[in-house]
Image (tube, rainbow, N blue to C red; front, side, top):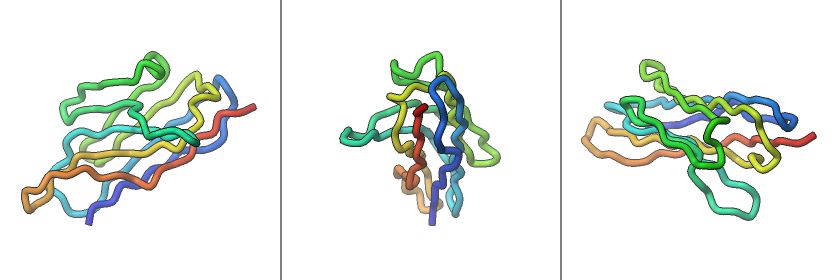
Length: 120
């Protein structure tokens, strides 16, 4: 069974930094794209950043220049370095991964989320 577990969330002051991590565990053949999404109270879940298996990245306009997504393929881990945080970045951040199982099935998996609160 595949699991994604996020860590690194917490309370930070405006202008501060956090680094989120998400580890994929279980039995699978490979991980394709990975990404981070966020959901603020009363809003829909939205894309923050994605990274392909080859390292190509994509960012929401609101985080360009402030957030950096990266991955460590041998460790099945994706990171989100969040700098210059703003109160509007406050949300639950979810990890997503496209995983190819040993049966040949490809599907998206989601973590349970980690809360990021930006407040003074």
